[in-house]
Image (cartoon, rainbow, N blue to C red; front, side, top):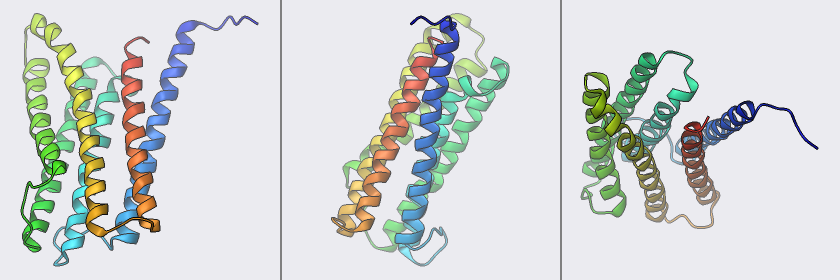
Length: 224
């Protein structure tokens, strides 16, 4: 059976489907994160005298900022119905929000370490996380200088491919940091067969699938 549907319409529909799956797993991840932190871990409070509540600020802001807002910034070119200049501004602002959240999230975990007299930067998670944060800030700075205030179209054309590849790499570095962080916290808490352990596992899978579908929607979007 043959169909007369325009191939461009089918491609746009497939791209929208990939973005829909990305949003689905993004929302699911946020819900699971909030359930974990509020139901199993007590609460979320930066100024608390309870170290556990201070720590909970870290995973929430790092995930929402460096994964959710970062991913939305990357997908903005396909989801925002506006001219390219506006899309660039939205892209830049979403990344700024991610960086601000990241700063607060990092301050929270360092404060938590001080409260329980625990050393800093001792784990693979911390190495990946801080490296990702530094590279993320550099990526934003270079992007701002080249694509927002830069005047050379030749430089922009040469840099756009590297900028996109670096953005995708940083997204998965952020996801890697999140997954290693969940594993580290589960080990620290001694979680194994409890309901909380299963929730953390599902949270990790949801974050990973969110990143996969975001990346697929971005790559696929180039051919629509």
